[in-house]
Length: 415
Image (cartoon, rainbow, N blue to C red; front, side, top):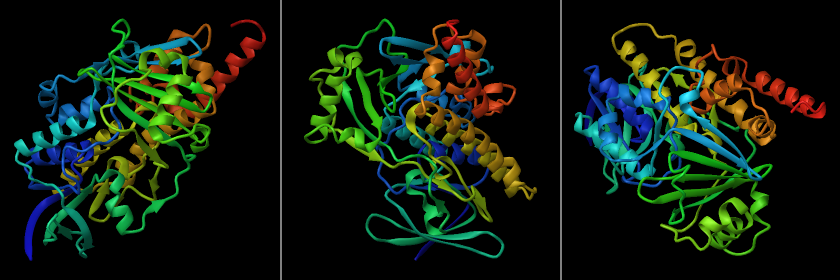
């Protein structure tokens, strides 16, 4: 059986794995990526947030991405019953990037994987991790199997698990735990968007409130294709009869904001369904490994947090792994897990507030306060680690208090 030795084994070639691999590789360590699937492959998470640009920049990926001509994104628009709340990242409270990209993820992820390979990091596709054994000194021996059934082993000083939905280490070591999120369903497709308006698109994501607990994403790409998806309680979709595409088109017809634009629209591929996606785990690290990206916790697509949590977690973890390889002490709980949970908990509070409609009340208030809107805009831009922002530091209570104030002022005729 073939055996290979590396400093760091990275599991998964998505944004999480490639960002981590690049940063560790640039520090002079031998890195290898194993990826279960063949790229390009489809995945959701197509609207990035400005905060992830910092991680992509540190990984050295921006020049590679720029060459692809992806659609730039400068804000997020929310629509409900004709009312519009439009956030521009240039107005955010936190200093940082004020734009990012909207990307077909198959092309985007392949771009990052090709980039990291060009930097000297080998990527073994269609290679499945079947076993991991940690030694007393916390080094590891990982058994992998390629598409032809050939097995080999990889000895590593450290493992970074960025396997996303595959959740390799959590599954192998029984770390998965039930999510606190309510199960939801997404029905989506890529559409040939011939009726796109260029006046206020395509440089932003649009979120349409279809029902109080059902919403729509509209993500235009630079190639004329728009990703259009519906998210809600699985019971919502059962009121429509027929196969998935029939249901998809019926919901389009039932939403006034979408009907004229997407009626009889051509689909680039058949409709797809994703259900019960939220997941969590006991801890984000262990002796000899760290979890990054969706392996740590995946919340909900409403605020496009997935790629940001993936890339930022990898950015932080990679630098801690480098310190560990240098023989330095690393407090993984304080320096990594607690930091990541700050971001996760902030996004989670906004997810909960979206579905209990507190954020609807805030977003569509008749007279919003610009300073507060800018603070919330920073969250929507992914700056969920800036605790100088009251709507980050005290996220849940700040949202609840503001929604109550708006309700009270409306009842008194002040709004």
